[in-house]
Image 1 (cartoon, helix red, strand yellow):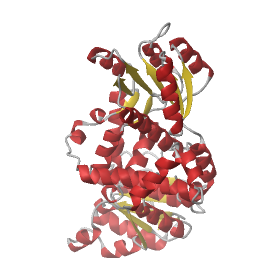
Image 2 (cartoon, helix red, strand yellow):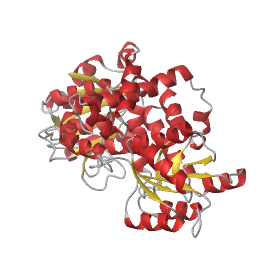
Image 3 (cartoon, rainbow, N blue to C red):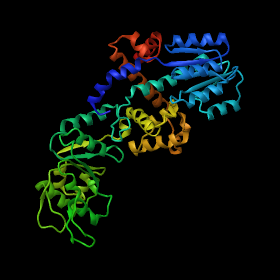
Image 4 (cartoon, helix red, strand yellow):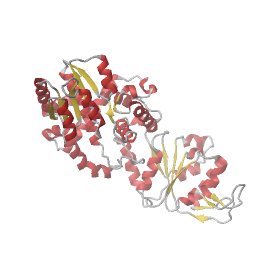
Amino acid sequence: MHGHGPRTLHMKETVMNEMQPIRILVAEDDPGMLDFLHQVLSEEGYEVLTASDGSAALRALEEAAFDLVLTDIRMPEASGMDVLQRARSSYLHQPVILMTAFGSIESAVEAMKAGAYSYIPKPFDLDELLAQVGEVAHQIRLNRHRPDAKDDDPFRIVFKSKAFQHVLDLVADVADSQATILVTGESGTGKELIAREIHTRSRRRKNSFVAFNVTAIPENLVESELFGHVRGAFTGANKDKAGIIEHADGGTLFLDEIGDMSLPMQIKLLRFIQERRIRRVGAVDSIAVDVRLVAATNRNLDTLIQQELFREDLYYRLSVVNIALPPLRERREDVVELAYHFLRKFNPKHSLTGIGSKALSQLVDYSWPGNVRQLENAIEYASLRRKKGMITREDLPQWLQAHPVTIVENERSLDHMEREHIHKILSDCKGNQSRAARILGIDRRTLARKLKHYET
């Protein structure tokens, strides 16, 4: 989401999506058990359709859309494994919970390999069944809560935290000015995304955004790349070439890793900022260029100035506005949002149905020294491992699994996320608990119990 605007635009659509109840198909050949499950799940606020055997379940999957399938394994005509395969092969890729009185380790392993979300032996504990159904429902609601519009945009900014909202508020304030901006933050925090956001919100948005990483090319070629050159300026200069600054004329120039620029190049860049004119390497005449400059670094420029590795006058020219990006460990509430964003990115065919609660706990609890880029890599790895179904803790990279989760802190984090989501729905419903319970897919008693728990 991009700040306040899209949040407002998507609010009505988000509430409409969340108002849709979780639809469950229950397949069970025992009439008494089927009626019992229908009653219990309906009382929990789910929309339930029943099938008395495997064939009826297969027909139901052909005729209607469901969010979740709960099926016995051993049924006449078609088995629960047949139902599982049909559900997993549909474009919806519904998560499936299997249950059976004839459970065994072998059938459980077979079911999980086939893509089942979970496996419950009969006689089952009702609280355990409802907990597993509730976990799937929670994942579905999280997905509904995230608008799909432009979700494949590689430059989409995803956040939930107040810390990052403050960043975007500052971006909104300065984007349309001509002030030079310095973006600081650790590697992987999204400095180029912020630079692009500044460009997108400015009057220069219809012109070019040109990014240049100072460390990406050899030092002796930086001047030619930035300022261009004329034919014969040096060996290999066979024709005139415009530099990157010229290509950005009328638009925005983003200079990344500015703290690694050599002192001679710093002098040339300072002259350009002061005069707004460039001289190609080997040229006599200068050229006027209209460019908005945004620079970024993950290094401490104050320290570099003290070490005489960075010019103090250039620093003041660059940092008319300084935007400091918080590391991911200081905005943990963004981890789940980002994890689902990357899951959709690496899951274009929707074969993965979500991220299990233990995996989410591991993600939220980790400190992420590599920040958002490291989280993206972890989700890509997990997506390659799991391929379909629900990502589990065991699908995460070994270095992440090895991190010990602080149980107390983890429980607090998950509890905080649920509490925040419920309070948001209540706010949207103007305090109407009955309507909020319907949107959340739970009964009013459950909502009241949760609210009472949050007050203690």
